[in-house]
Image 1 (cartoon, helix red, strand yellow):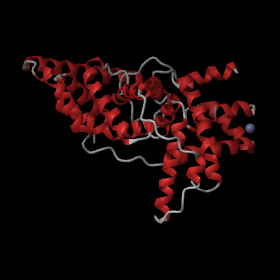
Image 2 (image 1 turned 60 degrees about the vertical axis):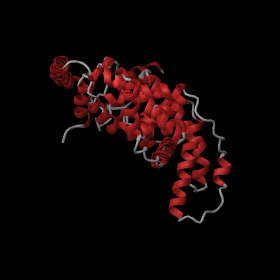
Image 3 (image 1 turned 135 degrees about the vertical axis):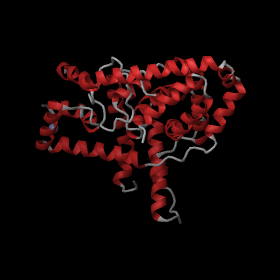
Image 4 (image 1 turned 90 degrees about the vertical axis):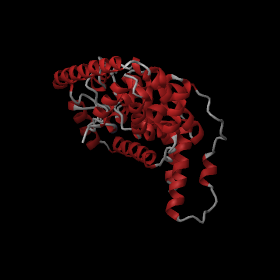
Length: 145
Length: 185
Ligand SMILES: [Zn+2]
């Protein structure tokens, strides 16, 4: 693999978005190429510098303000005024939806688990869209260039 | 312990049924993350608070349209991203790198002084990025989102996210490297 091609994908490589044989191919190139290795180190250093910078804490009253604004606008009362039976029905329907979602998620999970997504999985949702993962897109980018 | 998203799912369901207390729980679970994201996007507390609050209020208003195709967090962040990109934030004087590097010696303890300077430099680097690059970088670096999740939060393709991140990192590096070389970071 050429250096220019490796460099183009170092960012995604470092973010863990490239998996399988392509990842190994890049790793092998890096073992033998000091220039690209240095480039990766510089990239890592920049990302780590950014990550290390702290953000001030969120204000303690944020939730209170949000709720106050919702109540003031009347949007909070509209839903609360619905009759009890309507709310019970909505909750029951929602339980059915969740159960269905979990089932679909379990069925889909076998096929797509972890495809291109980071290992932490904190944002997993039972429903998966049809958009391709980066790993799939990456394959096509590779063959184009 | 429940997974955060399971907890979200239940709270979303109750919020859709009009349960404002459930929505309040969602706000509490996500306020920290959303405020941090907005702070990174606009670089000051006042705008960050205003944007985070507006995003939550919109989320409540649109919760019936949320179909669970992404996590609640990604959906919320998408609303906030749109607000942040469209908002003209308070104009702050652009800090020159040379100014930051030449900051007068401080009497603060060494470590806290360095930390403060690092924060300023990083925020100055982020401030200089076009907003879409900034959003992609912040979601990747601080939120640990995958490219697919970032694509959803920004309403872009995965491929566009990859190229935004390549450019964002190049730009940030160009800005931060002189400071790193002078060992100020
Ligand atoms: Zn090379």
